[in-house]
Each structure stands twice: as C-alpha cells, then as structure tokens.
Image 1 (tube, helix red, strand yellow):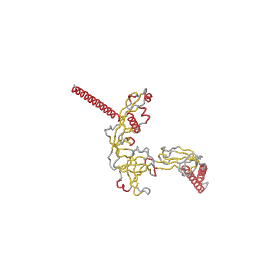
Image 2 (cartoon, rainbow, N blue to C red; image 1 turned 45 degrees about the vertical axis):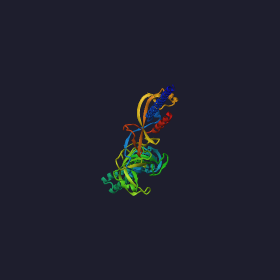
Image 3 (cartoon, one colour; image 1 turned 120 degrees about the horizontal axis):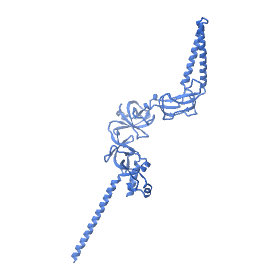
Image 4 (cartoon, rainbow, N blue to C red; image 1 turned 90 degrees about the horizontal axis):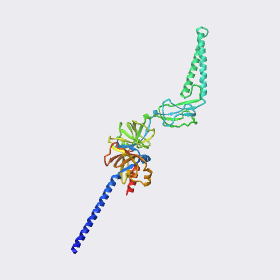
Amino acid sequence: MKLKFLIQYSLILASSIIAGCQTESSNNKKVVEEATHEHEHEEALTLTAAQEKQVGITYTALSYQMLSNGLILNGVLDVPNDMKAYVTSVYGGVLEELYARPGDFVKKGQVLGKVLNPDLIKMQEQLQLINNQISLTQIEVNRQQELVEGNAAPLKKLQQIEVELANLKAQKNSLSRQLSAGGGSLHISSQITIKAPISGVVASIQGLIGTRIEASSPILEIVNNDALHVDMYVYEKDFSKVKKGQKILFSPVNNANVSYEAQIDQLGQAFEKETNAIAVHAQVLGNKEGLINGMQVQGTLIVSDDKSLAVPTDCIVSAEGKDYIFLLKDEHTVPESPKNLVHKESEERHENHKHEEGLNHEYDRIAVVKGVSSRGFTAITPVKEIDENAKIVQKGAFFLLAKMTNSGEHAH
C-alpha cells in the first residue's frame, strides 16, 4: 500500500515538473517571438503626410564623392580687377534716382541712376551760345566767299572768319564731350545719367538717395562673376603635392552641402605675409550660382580619383554608439487610425485623426559605418545593400530617430 502511494506521488510530481517545464518553455518561446517581432519593427517607422509636412522632411540620394586621398585647403573667391568696377559720377551732386539693387544683373551702358547738379546748366548755356555763334559765323563765311569770288573783298578777311568758325566748332566739341562723358545732357537739364561701366552683378551700393555724391566717389560696385576664381592657400610642407591641372572640390564655409569644382592654372611664387602660405590660383568650372566675390571657402585638393559612397553629413544620426540613416521605404493610402500606426500614440491624438485619411510614409533605419568627411559629405558603408535610387532622409532625420527611440521606450 505504501509502495503504491509512493509510485502515485512520484508520477504526480513528475507530471507537475513536466507541465511546469512545458509552461516555461512556452513562455520563453512567446518571449522570444515577441522580441523577434519587436526587433523586426524597431528599425521601421511610419509617418502620416501631415506629420511629414509638419516636420518638413526633405530627401537626398546616394552619390559617389572624392573625399579621401585629398589635401584640405582654405581659400577665398576672387574676381580679377578688370572684371569689377565702381559706378561713379564725373560731376558731384545730389543722388536723385537709383534703379539697381544688390544682386541685380546689369549690362554695360545700362542707366543705373541720376545725379542732380545745377552747375551743369552753365555749361549747357555756354554750349547753346557757341552754337548760335557758329550759325552766325557760318553765314558770314558764306557772305565773304561770295564777295571774294566777285573781287569785292580781300581773301584775308575770309580766312580770318574761317579760323574763327573753326575755333567755335572746337569749343563746341569740347563742351559736348565733357557733358556726354559726365552723363550730362546737351540740352538744358541739371540731371546727370549714371551708367554701368561693365556688365555684371551689383555687389554693393554705397550711395543713398538724397545724399550728396562727390565727383568720382563710388555709388555702386559691379562684379562680373564669369571670371570668378578661387585662391587656395598651401603651406610649404604640402606645396610639392600641388600641380597645374589638378582639380579642387570646394564648398562655401557657410554652406557645406553645396559643392563646386575648380582647376589649378597658376601656382604662387611667394609666401603670403599674413598666413605664411603660398597662394594657388584655380578657375571655377561649371555652375557658379551662389558664389560671391570675397566668399570664404574650404576645399579638397584631389590627389587621386578614388570615390566613396557618401551622403550629406546631416543625413547621419547616432544612437547608443551606432550611426544610422533613414530611407523612405514605402507609401500607401490608408485611414489614419491607431491600427495603421506602427508606434501607437495617445487616445487623444487618435480621436483627432481617426476621421482623416492621407498618404502614410514608412521609413527604414539602416545602420552604417562612417568614413571620412569633407565638404559637407561623409563616406558610409551600409550594413546591408541599399538601392542606389533610394530616397535618403536629410532634413528630419533627428526627428525620426527621436520618435523611434521614444516609441521604443514607451513599448517597454
């Protein structure tokens, strides 16, 4: 009897242990499945069209950039002196009208403003007086010619009047040229017309309407950016690496996301006094939009043609010691309800959006290994293959990271 009881007790105990193990195994399996499921979604995030618009998300694309094997240089944009000019007035006066603004493109000879100078009227009156004298003298010359032909007057008298006529015409030409060169009218007017001496962009304006302008004082500055070049400064230890014909990729210091190209055509032969560096002259190639004379730039002297897969540096975000980029994965039209949000939000927000419909965008977070950075770009090595036509999130990447991180913490 006792033996039978012991056997039954052992069987019950064994069953309990087995059942407990099965339950624990089932629970563990469930936890693993949940963790796996959670891991599958922790690299993805969905935003509604309204959220995307509010954040102002912008996209860029993968590109190959020459970032490594280069010499980092600083420099400044410049234009040759014969391609920039000040607009001045030959005669002083009050600036009455001004038709140009900074950034405007103007053509050579284009009227840019007017200066008021009452003193011009005296010159114009003198010109009118000379014109009248010329008319009268011409009549007298004609009369004397008739008298000489009829032997009624000496030739000497005719010659004297002809000399007087020539002198009057010389005075007329002198006054006319003075007025025309200074922008004044040949008729009675106190206005002086200011014209552009060269074609180019208005870089700055020194004169103000209503103020007195002295003769030859700058009113505007015009720069022709077609001849824009960049002067890069190289220290003595690196000068042997620089040769004519080499390419330089550069960006403005205040806008590293935009890249331009230049080619070295001259090497300096003396050290700059202030920097103790040698100036390298390079012509800017291709597009010059956004470049301004005097702008500070930073560039990379290309020593080899090796290119790296890269994205703009602000596409890359970091979390827990790892670096990521976000890709636009998919878009589909669905009602904006809690079931369609990968990361659930508060019930109050659900109430505000549950009747709205829109285009939802899904984003993938991809881990990358960062490489060298230059000119606003950073080389990357993705942990998995990325389509070369993929849309990479640029503006808004930090928002996506924060939203994913906060949602993940809420889930736990």
